[in-house]
Image 1: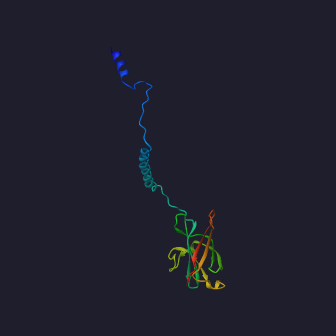
Image 2: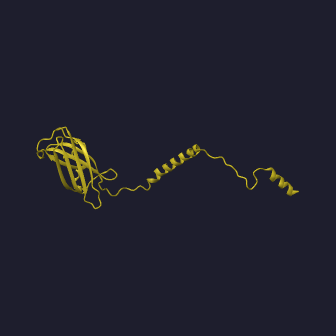
Image 3: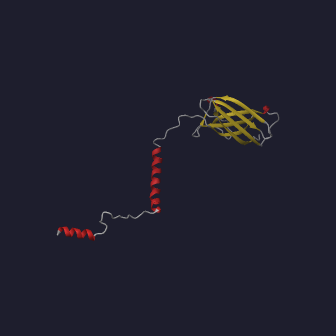
Length: 182
């Protein structure tokens, strides 16, 4: 009798056969998106907090670029000021060769090439765009021009830097500047 009662309950209950497949409801794409967005935001937030623990300072402050060039008026003629920066954008110095070329508004060209060291980079003179920043100045005496440059015109300034350190990559910039009007 016990055996018969067991057989009846098995037959009466559905999905108890060993081959029965239980279907689970599928989640829609919107549900996955709503789950993924907070997860991604949480991981990003944790990365922002955690990455500061592993942040290292850049120990090498090698110059990699010319940040800014300006053409300024000077009591003896004109002055080209420029600032070099490292990989994180901080002002730095360079040991090597600097070549500066100025094409004045009427087409005249003035150029020079100088060997520079870290001690040649000083705070730039007051009254200029880069005043107070640590950089390098090249003064162009008025006597260097065959005829006086037309003041206020557009001039092209090219600065090329060849660092003397082994493995350092040369860098350069070209800037369009207004020739000083005074």
